[in-house]
Every structure is written in C-alpha cells, then in structure tokens.
Length: 232
Image (cartoon, rainbow, N blue to C red; front, side, top):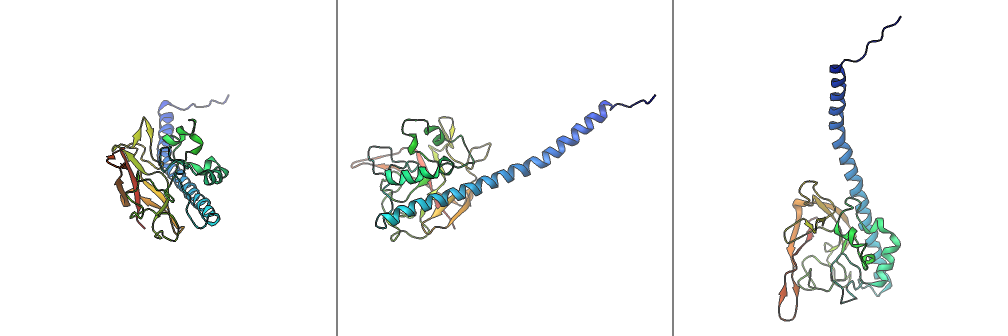
C-alpha cells in the first residue's frame, strides 16, 4: 500500500508567500506596460484628430474650423460646436474621441447628456475665439485662426490637462486622463503642435495658466486652470 504524504500547513503558506511575492514583482511591470499601451493609443488619437482638423483646413480656404460657431453653448475646449468638423470627428468613433487611459473623466459622463455627442476627451484649441481660455488672439500658446499665422510650437490639440478651483476632480469625477491613482493629479499629457508634431510631456514640464471669461465691463473667474504649455 502506497502512502502519499500531504502538504503541511507551513509548506502551503510558503507556496502562497512565493506566489504573492511573484505577483508583487510582476504586477508593476504589467501596469507599466498597460499605461504605455494607453499612451500610444492616446498619441495616435491626437494625430487622427489633427488630420481631421487639417482636412477641414484644406476644404475651407486654409482656415482653422470655427470651434465656437454656436455662441450660446458653453465654450469649453472639450466641445466641438462646428457641425462640419463634428461630423468628421464622429466618423473616427468614440475610441478616438476619448483617451483609453481613464474612462471615469467627467467628459465620458457628459456623453450621456442631451448635448453629449459634442463632447470629447481632448481639447482642440485651433479656431477658438473665446477669451475663456485665451486672453487674446495671438496668445503665447494658441494657434489663432489659420495655419499661416500659427507658430510651429502652438498647441493645436491636447488630451485634457487642467484643474478646477485647484482640484483634480469635479463632482466626484476625474478631470484628466493620465493621472496618479492616489492624488488624481496628471502624470503628464499629450500635445499635438501646429506643425503636426505630437509627443508626451511629463507633468513637471507643463506650463499652467488661469483664465477668466471676459465680458464688456467685467471678468468672471470660472475656476478653470488650463495647461497650455507643452515644452518641447
């Protein structure tokens, strides 16, 4: 009769401990790989949006699209109120309109609202005329009305890097895409410049500005601080 020896409790605990140690070593590598894949997809999205904008430019006398054509709408850079460009962007699909890194941004939620089909997880600054996020046309960072007047390092498209009244979340939802899991602060962002160059910039190399909505006789602080500076 063959007597088979069973594992002792100590041996089982040792095996479990070894598995836990291996998991602890491997998980950061897996998470890092996933984040790199998400960044690559996000970078591809910004380039596809750039091509959509430039396609509009080639069809409309070399002018950037008027992004605030519906003046009664809230002029946030995460909306496209230009019907022509909006149709082109929608042809790209929701996976291009939103960064895959964070499905819990407020702009994902806004797509469920009545005007949500105009929302996107990226900021398109080309063709913007409102002083909500730029003091005047010809800003240090923004491209203005046409590619001919845009500086090569002007920011054309970014992937939603901003804060609201100094916070990294609003109404319990994340504002940015690429964030630190504990602080919700952005770890960096993508930018596509007016010359078509697109790249990732770490958070410590981003420039920030607080902007005010200007009215004829007074300014209103809406609480938003936008990241408009992506250093090369």
